[in-house]
Image (cartoon, rainbow, N blue to C red; front, side, top):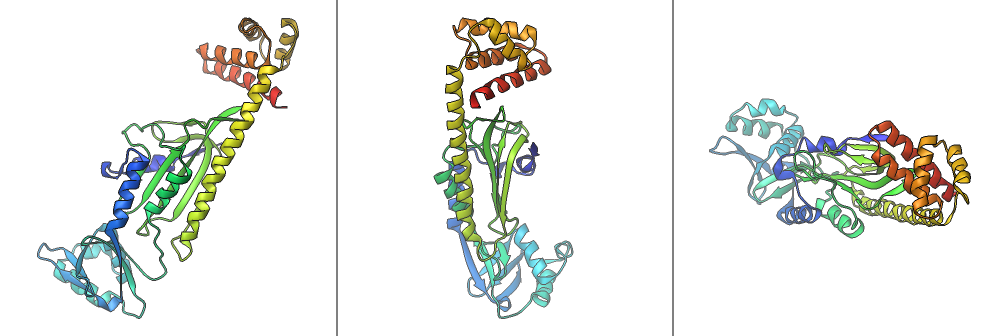
Length: 343
């Protein structure tokens, strides 16, 4: 089993304005962000740095006008010019403008600027292909209808985040609990993307047993990850992510149907005709003498010594134990009994 910490790391690096309470609220934000954003293509020599009176820097993009830079796009511009961001930050706006005038490359391949109002969100070459967060969230609304954020974290965050640089979603199916190898698991996944090149596009699906208030996923199995860079074929990944979510949902439904069949069989199958015969079966399953006696008394109240009656009795007894080891042992024994119905 694995311990997954992607959502845990996101929890402590996000500011309150990047946190969303529901998938609907996140989707509205992403659609608004997409509608405000605009791709502008210009040759490098058409980009001219312009110092502002506030001692900040703007970039004139051909005839489209002048745009300010945010922290991310400023760093990208420095990489493009091959100058140190820390050094340029210490210069006056006039000097910084002259630095960029002399270091920005020229050529026949255009640059793409993603703008939001009068701010440049990102700077890329022709090899980069953008995938908007809104397109990903639309897939979630269509194919992950039973999934939602987990319980709120210790700081009130839900696991749904979107900022200037990237998006991250942590979703689970709170009613999707099934039994795998005698233990309870529910399905969930992480989904991430960046419209500005901060990170790849990706999804990680899993089956988990618990999520703590720090949004650490405990005891995860069947962990599957898919990731793609933002290159020419990145939009094809939308279909793959949709298929991955559909497979997770299909497996959940198959397991829930299978578990329901096991429960029905357990309710119909008797472990024995009398208490003595049932006690022998429980002893072979490793149930202690004291626990056997208590379980038989509870099962007798239901009138039949079915597998389900004994499993239910052991489960009820485990909840009354103060010692964690005793609870675990009783749960394990109940799981072994239920497997008799699956045989």
